[in-house]
Length: 121
Image (cartoon, rainbow, N blue to C red):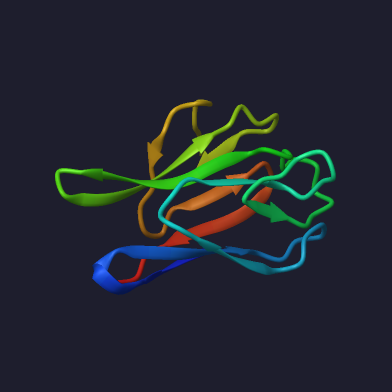
């Protein structure tokens, strides 16, 4: 699951917590305020967050999670980087290459890998 924590200046930063599955051990990755390119660990790709999994429904370059400022508010978003198996937010597939806002409690599937997005102040 994805859990987020506050840093100084009141800006929310986060960690990406991967749930255990048949193909993936649980892991935690820190998200920062810039764009975080996320994908499956491999020799031929170099994402910011490399998930060590044998689940090939997770692409080597799967998505970006980042923030934008809109009217003085920090908004988290996810963008499918044209992955083979897509991204589902709360069981709804999102279109590739479009930044989609994500909210506290959203269930996000990268292929079949389940994560949950959480915010904390």
